[in-house]
Length: 202
Image 1 (cartoon, rainbow, N blue to C red):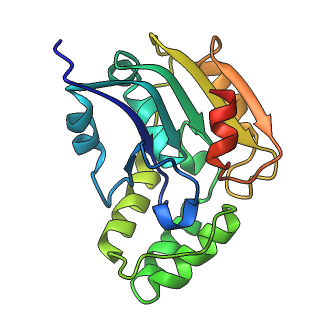
Image 2 (image 1 turned 90 degrees about the vertical axis):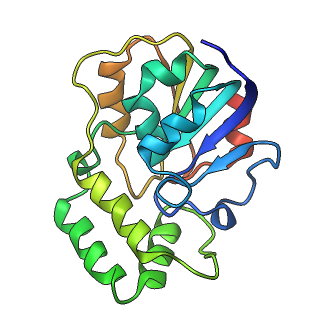
């Protein structure tokens, strides 16, 4: 395997626009799933890259865990923030379906409400692609991790905010079953955890 680029990479969550997150370092590559790349395109993007650190938030973390073998071969440390095995184990499908329906008429309102609940700044890009928002939610309706323990070759850290209004702590406990050798931390934080706090644990 020939690795041509060394990077630090952040894969964001659903509607995790850079404007809303605030303190992502400028020297980190930032990927907003379904806006920049879908799952398959993310995997193609990193095939010739490696790095010291990879951070995935929520949907981004789920994509990493779903493809753990590939990512763990390329990064020394992986941090998953607000991770989950299957999103609909914790959030009703009907809630997601209502969001999809409302996005078709008022995407800004849906995204702002989500960002506020996630503990982010409710700051949006000038233009939001409704189809890409919906594509991300459809992904969350069905995507799941393997139910058996995944081997990995990196340092793996899980973080979860104690004040998370999107995902309950059970999501973290369920991941402990799949990754018993990983490191698990809870912080006084929301669904989104400030990047400076993430880096302190890395």
